[in-house]
Amino acid sequence: MNTDPIADYLTRIRNANAANHRVVEIPASNVKREITKILFDQGYILSYKFEDNTAQGTIKIALKYDKLTKEPVIKKIQRISKPGLRKYAGSTEIPRILNGLGIAIVSTSHGVMTGKQAKANKVGGEVLCYVY
View 1 (cartoon, rainbow, N blue to C red):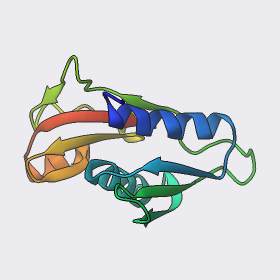
View 2: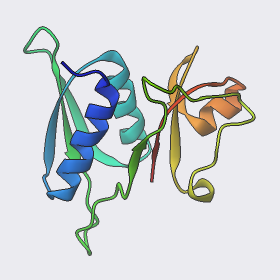
View 3: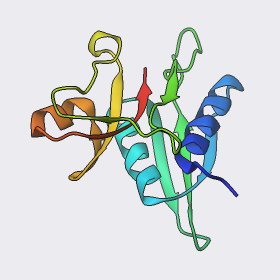
């Protein structure tokens, strides 16, 4: 049994990037679907597909690589708030990642969104992960 499904999601992406895989398949949940949509909107992944072939469903993510250097676009994806130690931030305390080049993904009362969107909507929440 997995105690932290979001950490498992991030680790599968990290491992697939390290092994230069094109596609990674992950068990689905609503939070993982929202994180996937954010990664696609911000340009960190090529595409995604939600498949409801099982009771839980799966997410297929096509990873993005630089055309010239063949390096992964996601340099680092790091879990911040963990089940043993939750990290919350108010709308004014949400950090800037790599001076604005990366994103923080925040779970708010208005749904899962990037740190910039949370600041713009003036809502805080649980800081799920950093991506850059």
